[in-house]
Length: 141
Ligand code: CMX
Image 1: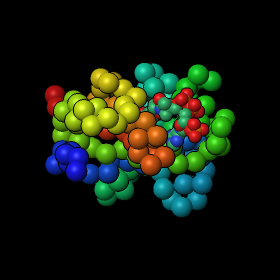
Image 2: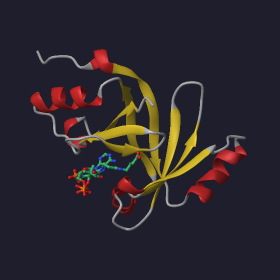
Image 3: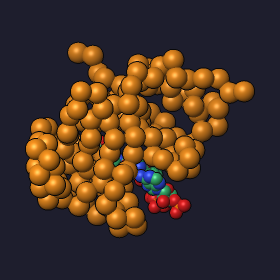
């Protein structure tokens, strides 16, 4: 039985949806009276993101910044759609080390800068039942 890491799991932070264009995607949500309230570029991930907030889990719309972006490759291969699930964790480095030591395939060995003042890292979908998993830790200032 493998060691559990979920003591560090705080909540599902957001669900990522790959879109070709944020403004075009906003039209559907506007019909539901839902506003994209925070738009930010994350150059390290080559995306522009827009957030839709609910009381608990947010939706992150992801628009590729260029054709090299992982999101551009995803859309090219699969079309627009659900891209990843992000778990908020309290200690991202320890979570990564724990997963790595159990043989899970990490995309990022070290955390990177994410939107909203966070440290983020991805677990490969091949290690997570076909779902791309993002881990996110808030940077306390
Ligand atoms: N969800 C599920 N499976 C995915 C996937 C996703 N989002 N992206 C790729 N895959 C699958 C592919 O379908 C492929 O599977 P098969 O081999 O069965 O065909 C496999 O993973 C490899 O995919 P690929 O097309 O060859 O693509 P790459 O190897 O070039 O990259 C991945 C795949 C996951 C390593 C890359 O997309 C990555 O590094 N992602 C993490 C970074 C990221 O997505 N950043 C954007 C979000 C930023 C943010 O939230 O701020």
